[in-house]
Amino acid sequence: MQPDPFKNSSDSLLTPAKTAFAIIPNDTTDLPTATKAVYVGSGGAVTLRAVDADADVTFTNVPSGSILPVRVQAVRESSTASDLVGLA
Image (cartoon, rainbow, N blue to C red; front, side):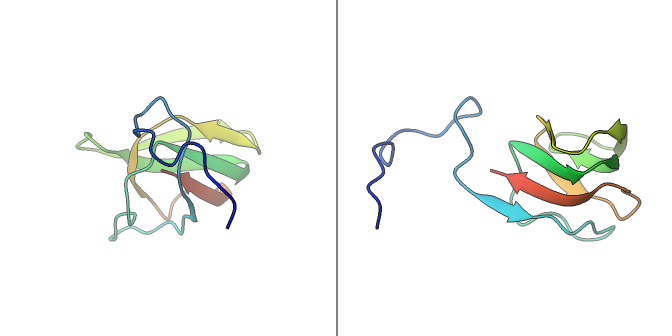
């Protein structure tokens, strides 16, 4: 296993993500963990629920390769962007 010089460093919103996972948009199930950001592989609209929000919001015309720096609890099926990756 490769050594990790940052293994004992504390995690914060300002530090890089420690894990990444594929996001499958779903209207009834939240993500397995809240994200620090979402990577958009193929552009379009991303409808999401932020961690402290009471309602969904849609980011439109998000270009391919973008990173949305939003703490997200859910991504909805109405999203047209694809190849989404949660960064946590």
